[in-house]
Each structure stands twice: as C-alpha cells, then as structure tokens.
Image 1 (cartoon, rainbow, N blue to C red):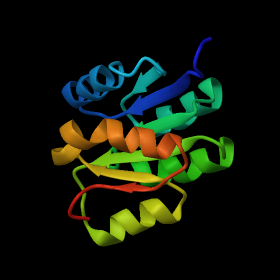
Image 2 (image 1 turned 90 degrees about the horizontal axis):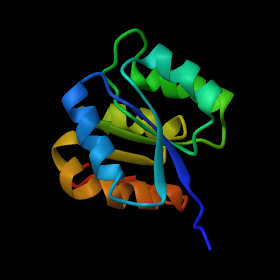
Image 3 (image 1 turned 45 degrees about the vertical axis):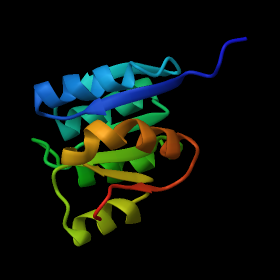
Image 4 (image 1 turned 180 degrees about the horizontal axis):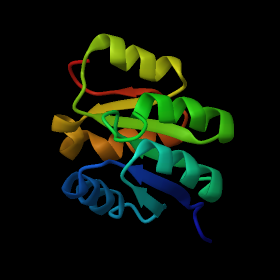
Amino acid sequence: METATIRVLVVDDYEPFRRFVCSTLKRKPDLQIVGEVSDGLEAVRRVEELQPDLMVIDIGLPTLNGIEAARRIRKLCPECRILFVSQESSADVVQEALNLGALGYVVKTHAGSELLTAVEAVCQGRQFLSRGL
C-alpha cells in the first residue's frame, strides 16, 4: 500500500541553501519535490501550474518577496500549505507571514534541526515556529 505523496515546491534564491532544503526533504520518502524556483513571481506561476501540497519559501526573494508571493499563492491555491524558511526573525515579519495563512516559520539558522519537524507539523495542519521566535 503506497502512502500519500506530498508534493513540494521549494522557493529560495540562494542555490546552495535551496539544494540543502531539497536534500533534507528527500530523506523523507513521502515527500516529492515537484519544482525549485529562485524568485517570487516564478513561484506564483509554478504554484498555479503544479498545484503543490506544500510550499517551502524564503522571504527575501527577487522580483516579488516571499510574503507578497505567498499572499498571491493563497488566492490561486488555497489548499497549498505554506512553510517559510527565512533568516528574517523579526516578530512583525513572522506575524505577517502567519496572518496571511502560513502554518510554519523556520529561521534558517535552525533549518538543519527543525526543517523536517516543521514540514511534518505543517503537513498535519499544525503550526510550527522556530525556537526563539
């Protein structure tokens, strides 16, 4: 019996970090990376095309920042779950991310230890916030 596969779109403009996220996610056999993009506008286009179950997105993106991209994506794909992974840790930014419908927020410095836990929580519909937020 096959377990349900969770389709993931990874959005980060820094390629080494994007590769790290993808290699971390590939450790879980129920996660399938359906796309990788490096800017917010492209993320919006790809979500419309791919209809992923989960989007792992940075905030500091070229063309369209992650907050604005996520706001647009919420309208295009309301069932897509959003997990922010960002170096930005100000309370205002985190609150704005959660207000627009993101379920999780991981600070990049904690991604090594928290990313898979955060993905699991978000996929189950639970909120996840990085340590120290």
